[in-house]
Length: 372
Ligand code: IPM
Ligand code: MN
View 1: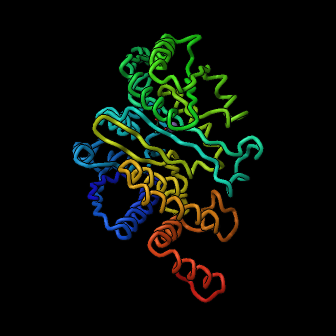
View 2: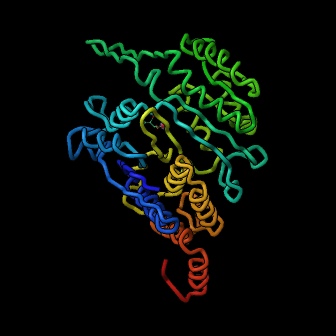
View 3: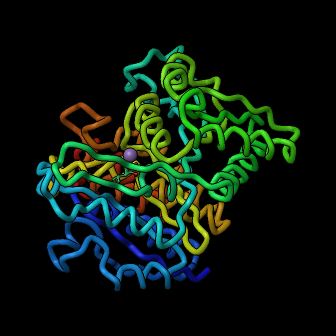
């Protein structure tokens, strides 16, 4: 298959983790005889530095002309800590989402057996957790009108939703629930917010089209508690933009490391794949950030194009790296942790020639070789 992939690695550790995902996709290309092209585009703080805007026109054009976007991270403390900052890196991401109509952000969460002890939560609570969050991504308070009074003492952010915006992401969530454990939970604040009441009304209406899916409704405060008290209770979660943002960071605690969570974002015209961790500026350029979430995002990209065998090859290689402890310091707290690039190399080599890399690994542990 021919695929044009736009690589928007962005800020902080974005470039180093994206490099690994590209390396892995090139291994897939070679092994399975595909033809992928990778074109880099500027976004975020680096784009402000180089072009004076967080989303240059040429990046947007590149995204429009590509089959898929691989995204790194956005955010740079140098633009963050001042309330007077006129232009923020995050605006690039928000504009990108809006322009490309990327309305559904899909954040799966599974607990990896060998990493279960890394979570601060008890094993008996999180074991076998497997849910997906469908977060609406181009509406709500993120995109409502923002105002600051002239004296600077009052501010407002409007929250608007239309039935069309609710319906399109809800349909995706219902379809996903239908193919899974057939349970959908809508998270909202319908006891207070009019927009939430609209969400409930629409979801109740749409539920009639999916009779096999059982639907329940939770207020976001209660859901925030339940998701860590009993995460196994959830199958598919559907929620609006801001609650989805908050709930997904909370949920990442369950998996032990945010460094493992990959996401798909679906739009009318584009698809984007990214790790959910941010730009992690403290670790920038240190070659120690965990690339697995971005590598797993590459697997989601392949799945999107129905390249299931290829995606499975990545997932098996990632599992092997975890099993063999070829992992970065966020999960491997020993002195023998692996660097970002080493994890990428291991995963790529494992895809191309499993036996050879395992043989090499054995020699390394016997002290006979120093390569990978
Ligand atoms: C995310 C991020 C973004 C968001 C930021 C960087 C604007 O936190 O993708 O979850 O709030 O959507
Ligand atoms: Mn977030």
